Length: 234
Image (cartoon, rainbow, N blue to C red):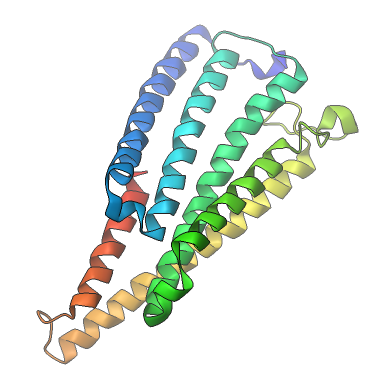
């Protein structure tokens, strides 16, 4: 794995400073999001904020594990055993996959709230939300530990990735494919939401009711705006 240690001393210093600074900022940011959600009984009862909380946890864990592993390897040149290295990399993979998965669940939640507003509370319940993000985390962890369980180029004697040591190229393509599908749906869901918001605004303008909005619609718009802001911040 020595061939992946390509940073010069000056580059190591810059990378270490950036990693620690951005990592600390990300950890504090996501801790703040979690504190806001946990301290508010109203937010804790809303399924949408279960997914946002899951996203904050995933980003927090990912930041800590990635910064520690990256600096430890590229700056301090620690060479772990293959299993320890794959365990650390699995932590990063699980966190990032869970982060994308949380965004995916949030997109589904927002999509249903716009597409089926009258049935939203019946379709998306707190119990279903908990089951959904528990299943998502389980799948993310299973995908992440596959290299540790044997899907790695050292054990299979296959082509290794040029980016990550010990990672089989087929596994990397599989992981990229899974996350790409999720990201495509996320983009589609939010494009649909923005389109619905635009058509709603145009319809209100045509009827001269720009300043008259139903309370339920107003609450839905505010909830949607808060969700989008939190997602962008995280």
